[in-house]
Length: 203
Image (cartoon, rainbow, N blue to C red; front, side, top):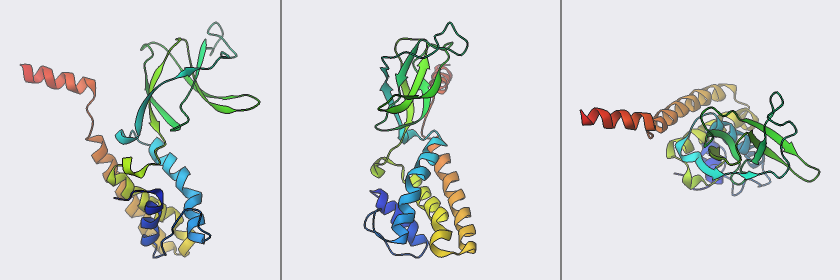
């Protein structure tokens, strides 16, 4: 199991038959390529699946300036809250809002800052969200393996110019993601399934 982003990058480079790097900012083509694709690839893969290990909870802070349109207007809301930036919120999974309450995710900008906000009609809200986790020790081992396979596939042509190897790595990455998602999906139980299990056992 790798313990840093650099080790994940080196697992990918090993699949390409390239030399290991010491940091993502090394002055080499391999390091520059890995540095270029690491964060966008990580973000896309975390956002694309409800990974258990990447989920965190937060109570959101209300933005002092309310939404431009109030709830009295079409598509309007009364309150807006700043989404977490550290770790960065990639996707809202669930909220503490009442079941019948709508919400929207938008961008908010001022003269000095910009961030994403959640708009709603309740004055307080907490969320469960997918976070950008860069601490590799918190990743599931199968996710780390799939990330290395994905990075190898994405970096393949830039580093090796080998189209056939890229096709092989695509299939390897595809299978690694299938396995990682399947196992991750088995490591959770919703409240509905818990209730169903308890009722069944009680009969």
